[in-house]
View 1 (cartoon, rainbow, N blue to C red):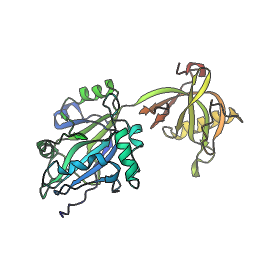
View 2: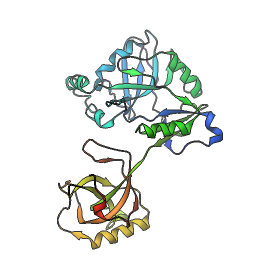
View 3: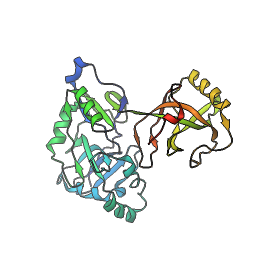
View 4: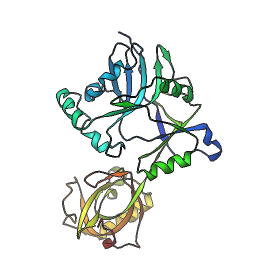
Length: 321
């Protein structure tokens, strides 16, 4: 059996669009919301998928086993992301979560494959036919990947756009997609490295939210808020949106601590107790703007971050109705 070299995935750094004058030196790909996978095709019909941590996730996605036959007898290592698609064809991490973590339950993985199909989006070629491609520029690796013609029932090679970064980013916003990944055309593949040659831009949304509680921080943050518990009013009741644990400066955290202290109450103000360990409750009078990526089907905010206080708003203005 062929033994292929192991590669840790290259990672992107958070950032903004490249300067306009350098736009034509970059490629733009839609940011996916799934599970990163390095794919090993051994040339004998065998396929292995390793997660970002190096865990073997091959049994989790049985529908991808036939990918091992797609290149005939050619051995390859490819980089990609396993996603679950929603009704619009967008990657939906919440849907994929039901598929993850089933490496020890192959029978259940097979059953769920029929209920929530996984799809592998391929975006890089690291090794092919005995040749290491990681030292080659992105443009060459991309040509190699596209030449493989990998389009199947559970895998594909999404398009990448060279130049036109602003238009690409605006298109992801208009479509409600997670964001954009910018890749320098000349960039080599740096396994296991978070490189400025790859930039990820997340499309953030904002919501005005009412603070109903908080959780104290630890260590130097003892007595200060480590997280805020926020919600919005629906039919007169405060519906829980989630826990916000980032986004403040030290000064803002101290200001929030004082506002929370004077608003303390014993009873949970949310329509349903979120059962957060260590939670302290407050009168739902403080309003803030919270940035977030998406909402779950239950309405909870994903990747929330505190943006600013909104003293100009009263809680009754914050409603999902």
